[in-house]
Amino acid sequence: MKKLLSVLLAMTMALSFAACSGSAANSSAAAPANSTAGKAAGGDSGDMTVVGFSQVGAESDWRTANTASMKETFTEANGYKLIFDDAQQKQENQITAIRNFIQQEVDYIVLAPVTETGWDTVLKEAKDAGIPVIIVDRMIDVSDDSLFTCWVGSDFRKEGDTAVKWMQDNLKDKKELHIVHLQGTIGSSAQIGRTEGLEAGVKANPGWKLVAQQTGEFTQAKGQEVMESLLKQNDKIDVVYCENDNMAFGAIDAIEAAGKKAGKGGDITVISFDSTKAGLEATLKGKINYNVECNPLHGPRVESIIKELKAGKTPQKLAYVDETAFDANTITQAVIDARAY
Ligand code: GYE
Image 1: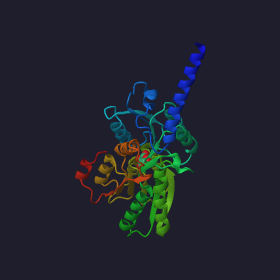
Image 2: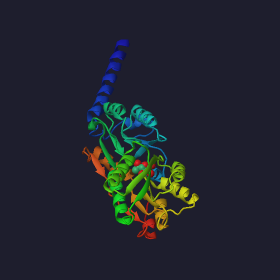
Image 3: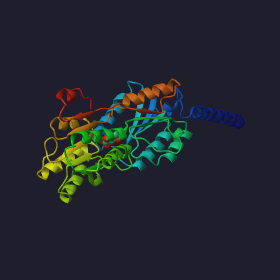
Image 4: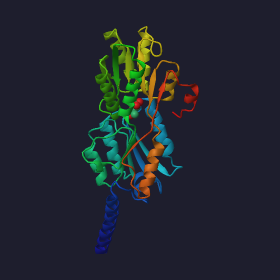
């Protein structure tokens, strides 16, 4: 009897090992269409596809819209069990979340990375577990591209170049331009690309002076605090280049509290990124002169990647979202009304 039991046990182990290596063999190229991982993860997830999403945090309106898009897409009614984790802007929390997703044997890991570097080890663990990793929004910088399945997000350098082009075209009458620069989270792709754009613009335009460059961490409170101190330190500021709408709102409050006028026809030109509904309202009011769009509605994009993977297809490795920009001189209420975020 004992012998029979141990034979049975050995057979069960061999079978479950085969199942594991079966899914590992699929690697990051494709997930098992009828994975049982969901059952392990939720206990009650049945045939649902289990998605673990590690989100950066809730630092901005953009981020809130991004989270909403993911939650609206990955619903039980659509056949998903979403395990959502808010990392509060800390990479260590994201690494812990990914390790938990691996342990829960989710079908797919979706990562919106806070910074570009530092992902090699944990993504190797996900790869070894045979779980496809989809990167969304910001990009990662890894030594081995096979550590992630694919990425979808924005061309942040292009966004920076778009803002610079507007500054060149619209502020050309000024012989000297004193620019202060509120940066996003240092080391995030959104910061890196938008900063590169501005720095290239400063190099190319001899009259442009970058008088200060400081992070406002993509939040309104920090944007306001930094702008307040920059206004005290510099009496000549012509432009504030804010790497997102929330920092722009903070900067505008600081400018107005200092008795100056922000935006169209004012003392300080305000450049912003994201073009959230609130950002566009500030643009329509003329408080933001130029707002470069960054689209946060990634839920349906990530879902179509998952559908491709399920169908055994190979999704495009890097997919850029199409984006535009809005000028306070031409924006209309209709644009804002049509805005989904
Ligand atoms: O611009 C900012 C958010 O990574 C594109 O992160 C995103 C940026 C966005 O906090 O508002």
